[in-house]
Image 1 (cartoon, rainbow, N blue to C red):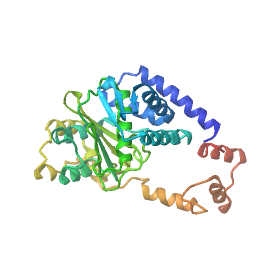
Image 2 (image 1 turned 180 degrees about the vertical axis):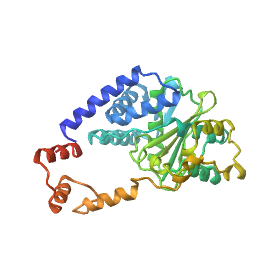
Image 3 (image 1 turned 60 degrees about the vertical axis):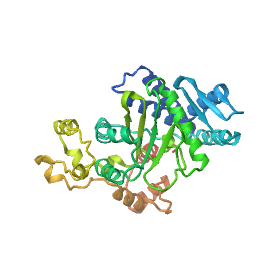
Image 4 (image 1 turned 60 degrees about the horizontal axis):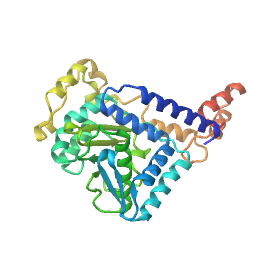
Length: 335
């Protein structure tokens, strides 16, 4: 990353942090997602806060980290776990890695909470419990991959920053232990497939969307991580074409019966959208791949300045040098 890019990241982070401090959030879920995004924006903040925790609240002889403000104790196996944790966070920070924000639209979050919240509450989880529920999730909120994080017996509203750091630490120690059961006494990681994740979900750039459900009394939280949700839900997903009134009625009816009748229910598409219900997006993932392939001259699956210049030369495109330089500067920040 160039010095200019680093400066822009630092400036954006300081602006984002100040905005988070003064912003009033619509819901607790909104605030949780905003604070997660703050940590994704600046990994060094995660590093510094974890270092403070280790220095002030850890007992390396007993292999525990005590977080008094949320009344939780994190257990790890040995000093090697702490060394690996420090190396993992430091490597992300040193690479100047800026992870894209999670999106968390009210429509998707309400649909998730109202439809699957009661099931999560009753079963202490979602993805590993019932295949029919997973299939319903795939239809309601389609995604190429899912990962769930369930934290129980915790006051979600006490300290959101501590909650996020707690989740990061617990998830790291669970994954680092290499256990077949991805769970501790505090937290459970749920997988959509059998592939064990290589990164902490809250810091994983492969996920770009989250849905958050707070349990009764805000004493538990379930975070569902998703990929490609915006592309897959538009415009041929029936749920997207419900009017606001229909959405409210659908959610008010409490589609909480997870039997076959609910699973097979089809939502009515308003007549004005009938002509486009099977239409694909104008720009989908396949077209993007074709676009990259057309410009990629060295078969590295990336578009570089050299690729753009080669295309201009190949097709004898007349373009003023100053305009070309400006174009490349907008596309490639290190130009």
